[in-house]
Image (cartoon, rainbow, N blue to C red):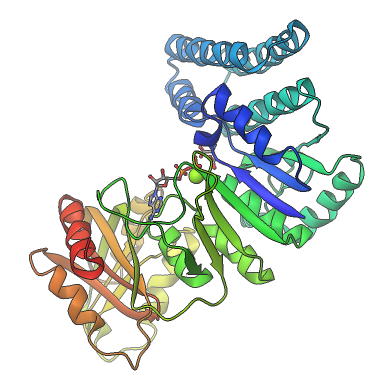
Length: 436
Ligand code: ADP
Ligand code: ASP
Ligand code: MG
């Protein structure tokens, strides 16, 4: 059985949703849907307004979003019977969202509001399939997708409950929501932005799928970020390691955590374009041929923290003390470099930055630099290779570089630079490494 995931842009208009139905109608597959494009952004905006107690503006935004859905269903469903069902459906979801504008607003309400996008898209898709007489079962991800107290997926629970849910269905086409899940306490939660890819990978691992297909608005992983650089091309084959590095360092086409579950079970991931389904796209699998440079990715919103201390000289245990602080605040470190008297590292989650800073100050002189980006070159840089670093740094000769990471993995060379130079750096790498 395959797992097939469609992102928001693949569902952005009624016409596109119909196209998705056509693509899956004859499949034996679990179909994972994101929210219709723009929905999670609007829901996030509503949440922010409610946290600020700006209830009237929140209500206006809810009305606007509902209007968008009314237009969508008028174009999606043709019979009166199914139009009525769809109108009732969106009324009930939007009344539910609106009910949160009246009372105290907490993280629990936030997560419930954010879940409405995927609940709506899957329910509307199911109605459309029924209207065109395609049999399917709608499974609620809230009945099987769960994260544990460390916010990690609970694989045993997911598999056990998913298998049970699948067995209750008579059709061979299953529809479910990406992104949403329950947490350790059984409350509604989510897998963070872009998390529908992760849902697809976790489902793929749970059912030992033959393939995980991620359908989006571009023909697979490109050699550089098409939002930043004009001339990019699609890469036909990628290894799991390369894909994971690219996703982690900013290639938005894949949620960073989504590669590992597939890799664990050796399931190929294929990235396909809903707007151009005949294009090959990208296959991600175990082995791909040797290739020096594969792709470039960039990630913004990076903060560098430097800890300088004479006590570090010839001392051991210093790094452990630093890592311990980041671990306690559940803040991952991306890039790290050390010298004899200083350590520089980067983070992209600033939630606990102030508290981390306060604790680090006991270890030495701490300086913090914001508005940085990581630019990462992915390829094969095994330790016996010569010259790759030279080629990369030659491209970057006009860019001020703050940090460099080489050798941490065979597949990644990263530099930390000020965000204002990111575009220039990515274009220069595109020209110098890929002749684009
Ligand atoms: P979906 O809504 O289908 O999940 P996303 O917007 O999350 O789609 O991901 C697709 C987008 O990822 C593309 O439109 C593209 O702009 C962006 N992207 C960033 N880096 C890359 C890359 N290296 N290759 C392909 N797409 C990329
Ligand atoms: N709808 C969620 C988001 O926009 C999840 C996803 O699209 O993958 O982040
Ligand atoms: Mg996405």
